[in-house]
Length: 114
Figure (cartoon, rainbow, N blue to C red):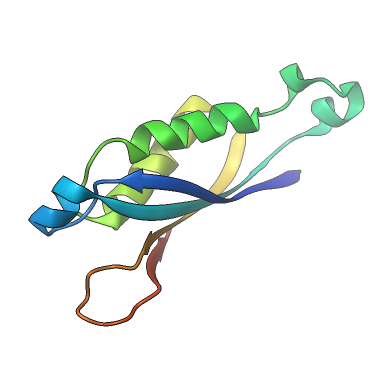
């Protein structure tokens, strides 16, 4: 088994419960960790036998482009879409962070992990 982590993918998106968040948007990061049987990729040294990081990123990007009220919902959609697109993935972990959330004070980020 191989464990792959794509760390801190950065997006500007329109997720949030407040109208301003939906309209103006804010910055987010996504870290995705998944495991899969990489035996054939390791032995053949070919991308065709591996899970393409580019394709994973594109799936995440597509989900980030769809506005949601809750980051929990976005993280769940990312997890489901990646699992659906890549049947060889055994386990997946998603961390989605909203940077500088509007909480009425100085807060660096709020994160959800599924």
